[in-house]
Length: 466
Image (tube, rainbow, N blue to C red; front, top):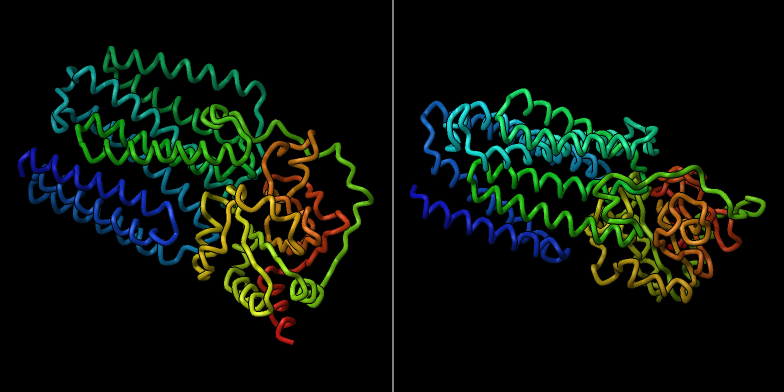
């Protein structure tokens, strides 16, 4: 295959990736967008194989590698639960980072095969690209591993605050820059691995201080990092497909991180530097009254909603864990049959990753026109009869709006407490992923429905049928 033909095919795959991102921007076109991305990736892989023209033995090894990876991916995709999707995404990001490190190492030890010079005489530009790519890749790898451990519950979701962490991060950052410049000037293998080690440490230190409430932004940020790592290695390998794909993933991830930072009232620069999520102790300062709750039953909830004119449903991670989305849609259908106006309110960081709740509701065939983002529906809570909160904790906590001592103060929330009645479905009065108490539980207009989310909604459906 000629280089001009390969460049054209890479361009085609790049266009398909762009169309895939466009399709994924809306639920109605997401399947089509996903398919375009798959076709684009297939074209890029086949073009790379035919352009490289490996020997029979090399081609066989590549096929075996693709078969192993493809089989593992297919099995994981079929078995993974939607509730575990965030940690799966974090794990995949770690693999992208690790791949960037391994490819950079291969380029360092076998530069002739990459067309970037010879051992001891690698092109200076390639050394710079290689060192930047491996640094971002290593940071992405360990950062994603920590994110996976936090999301999967294998590490505490609370911020882990090291003494003088900012000074340590700054020192490591300066050291990393010095090592990159030194490596580019000397091509020292020892310096290359020092760059890797410092980057691995920096990845850990950037993510461990980040609290659970900020994890959706972390997933988005690491997605961006993995893209830039791939783009950096693409320059080293002079592979147009990697450059295009990496730049698309990196830029789209950065834009999504920025949007989510606005949704959480966080500093974008602080997110990039890992300096957010937890200068925090427990929420305090706001008077929670006598901390007594009003507890209700499925029959109480059914009566209130059946006699309402407008109900706004707020899903959260608790709904995902209980797999209650199908029962929830059935409940909404019953209410609509009674003439009740039903809408769904989605917070930008509901769940454990961007779009988590939207995917779950789409899985249950909830009409897209019934689902609204925070900025589009928040003003309607004061005119609604019932806000039905199912497993959404931190994103409904009034402390974020009213308590300046709260660690989540300033984060925009769904103003469910402004509804005439707030029905809150939760297994217990325990804190959310941010690790702080929810003052909403103790408000006069809140009725707690303490039970498994799926069972509670199914009981409400039964009560509506009576």
